[in-house]
Length: 325
Image (tube, rainbow, N blue to C red; front, side):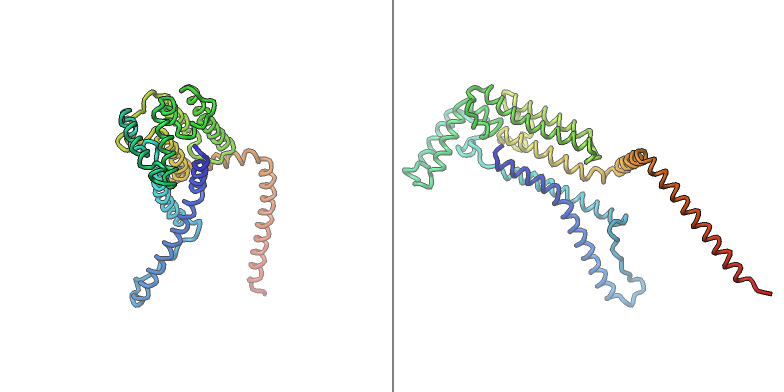
């Protein structure tokens, strides 16, 4: 994963944090505005009809407002999830297979040689001019990678970034280098999940997140260590995608679904959120029992004085209303 891909991933993560709530707020305000205008026009047109009434938009924080907000938020998250995955697929640039007009894991050495020679003649600087220099260099690099079994094995699983390793010679060297980078990313993700659970930043699904992370890491390790590309998975959807593209998409699916469930989960399972809130309230009450007792005693004294004053006032009013002899 190069620097540009890392920046794109961070931008998508920031988008998941801010865009769905903001879009939900705007859509809800727009919906209430349009509904209010429609009912106002309908009320003016039927002002003689006593049955024509206007519905006042619910106040922010009320049950009606919260219910409408949650419904809109669920729809926005589903749409943003689809957009996120489509944007990831669109962000993939042409691979060396695409440049040479080959199908991933379905070509012969003769096809590679023939397509490389044809493309080199087409984009040679002597024929295409200075404009074809970059394309010609990319073609030669792609040919050198695909014709070399070691480089091709590393490129298929980790992309072009792993080929920057200067000390890597054998297949094992490239695997160790690529897996070390992947292990660092998973370790960072694991630490973040630990911190989120310890400080209770996320109360919903604290445990199944670790299960999903373990499943995703095991799946990626299986794909990388497999001697041949696993064409069984997603073969009907993207049969000619390179292995590292499939892994990248799976990582984004894991990240997007995890964030989406974190936002939608408490809405779809309100009883779970209520239990967490009750547990938090019980913990807070037990930790501050001494201060609560003192505050309760002070509150009781004030309540007793207030009742006595109220009773005295009632007696005075009663005595003033009695007729004098």
